[in-house]
Length: 148
Image (cartoon, rainbow, N blue to C red; front, top):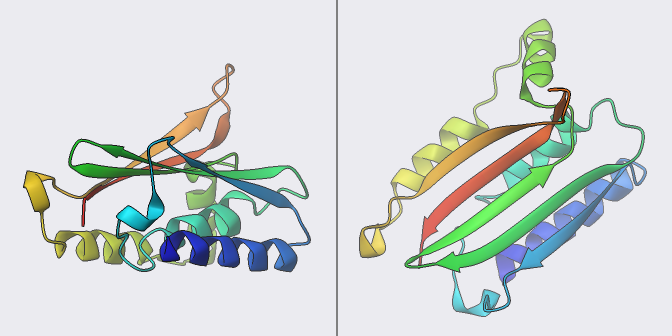
């Protein structure tokens, strides 16, 4: 519950900083009680930050982030979905600026250090989203965590 609240505060601050160019929502499964789970501190924040800084770089309005949480067997599934410009365009801009992000590598390493309860391996899937014309329509992060 604390980590979800920290994400809400972070998103509220970023909304102010970026003049309300995006909105966000949390979707918790009906049987999901955030007080029953532990999410490693700051494990989701880098993905939310990437959505805002890179995904919404060109958006003046209408950005959306959806964060969802549900328990599946012995694991917690977290998704972060944005309607930003997509990773291919963001990578092209990064190469122009010669910036190398370490956030994904650091987060992956942190996940490797988690205790694997019930045989659940923590993992991250990054999925590019496309519209019907195959234009970039955002990014989905799917994070699986062992129940802690």
